[in-house]
Length: 201
Image (cartoon, rainbow, N blue to C red; front, top):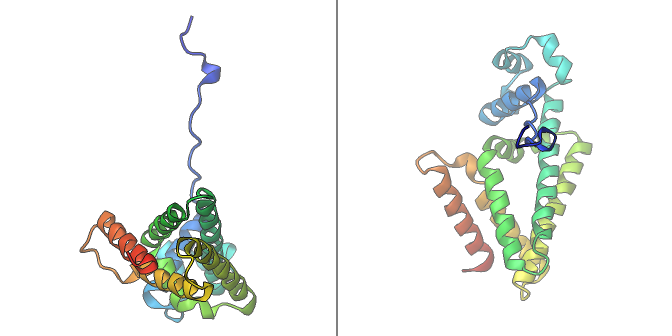
């Protein structure tokens, strides 16, 4: 006789194993961010990833495809994550704003290379994916504008939009931050600076 019914034991799902494609893309993003898009060749990426030319092209058609694969999912996940955090606080705009700030600061600290890539290389993309990314960005900004307009109803929407973009400038400064300050303290400083920029206190 056993004291625990084995049929009712549950185990958390195993985390998704990173694919070789994911690994190659991360290496490419890091190289693009540090050397610039034009400063990196497919041979450079293959060498850093330990992949031969034909195997590399099995995963990506070229550098442009890597750039698209890096930037579009990020923009999609930012929009989805922002919408989810706003939805958590339908009756508390200040809590929604704090949640949005936490969300974006965490993203910015975890992904400085992606931010650098976006800041410097977005215009390298063809028109269609570039337009798609811009649209996702605008929708994400409007999530912030809507929440900020509830926190500060005296602000016209265009002014709230200016403040939202200024806040992104603060939070997206992570590619330029050194390691002198530990991550927890950097997060706290970025959160405090952002909430002050948006609300004035």
